[in-house]
Image (cartoon, rainbow, N blue to C red; front, side, top):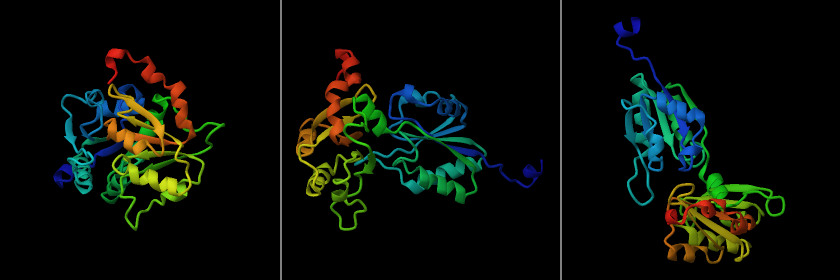
Length: 265
């Protein structure tokens, strides 16, 4: 009553929720529950339609997608939408492909919510590199081949002088390298890895639209991956896995082997 008399709005809550890599069955139980209960769902380009359909019929659904080379909602606008909805007293799910804190800018959104005094929680999702590699038959770590794994973004221009990623150093780690958003700069990235000492014959897998009905994959080498993936028409969304473990895809690629021929791309 007092809040109404003073025309104050009770703040809602925001959940930063990972929708996983695309296969709706990889959604977590907690994410499922929160989506069904939300007053508003603010969702990304890569969120599966089946997952979005879990929202209530009366829930407000707001698209704030980003697609490389195409439409892109400014990050500041996304954060403003979350704050506005929560200040209106709504229970909000910010639905993000993969995991909110793995190259999903979830940290920036969490900071914006804290600055606005909005209570929030984070629900992890299955990130694309882990899921894509698993569906492609690639264990990212393996006692015989790799004891470590590194997640990197190829979204920035690796040729710029102030690049934050010194690719030559990563060539020396002996770890599996997983590249997110790396297709545009793949030729430059692979050339710099070779300059750092990584063998041109290092196995590389490209996995596009991982875990979905459009899933497809390419197994090649570091020296040839940029050209071969371009010729085969591979593009975003895709994960690139670099390292000896990628070669295991030849015998462990269970997902493609299990798909009916009619569903193959």
